[in-house]
Image (tube, rainbow, N blue to C red):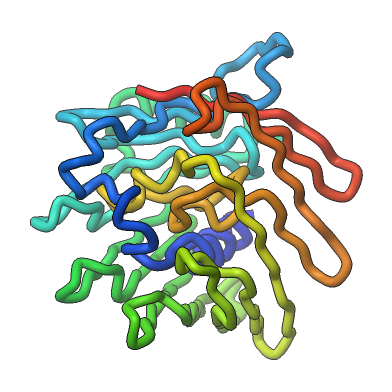
Length: 295
């Protein structure tokens, strides 16, 4: 399971990162945007009673005005706790994560240990995975390096390289990983290429090449502001598991993501007409609702 979680992290780093300047009017680094909202929690199906907030709520904890740590697991298995370190550019340079899976034998104890580490802010001393982020001269992500190890039975190294076109748009991401599992060597390469952008430089079509297995993803966007966009733009923070696909790099929310044989549909509510308060997610017969709360 640790290997699968780490591979998912590599893939998600690739899919999460895109153009840093998609819409200057929504760029939180622009001093005119003092009203930009930053996420604090995302709650799965908020009308249902829950016996554990960690099982159903994603939480971002701020320190000195910027994200310090986060629990990201309400929509994924396994989930993860994260802790961030920042570079001189004010963006995340190192991410430590501690994963857990309560659905497997020993999972409850694993979750309890992870919660204790998270609440004591010692993930950087007890991490299961770590990745480092490099930026180019334009303060855009250039490369990420990842490493993970599980008591000697599993180890993996990975990297993601980012390529930009002549307009400064991120159009290609190349992710590679290799390691050993039970003494057996394995490797993997995934390439994502944006083949079409909209007039706001948001990807309309992305081609995925996973070791020769080709898929194409298509996107349609709404008019509400993307609640994840500010976190990525200002701090370089993004999730490895997200309810909104392609969510950290597009200034506006995704309405539809579809392939030749599947679709994901997102219907939003917004009292202020700017930021979503809830989203109803529907995909191939599965439905759920998520609530966004802001600082």
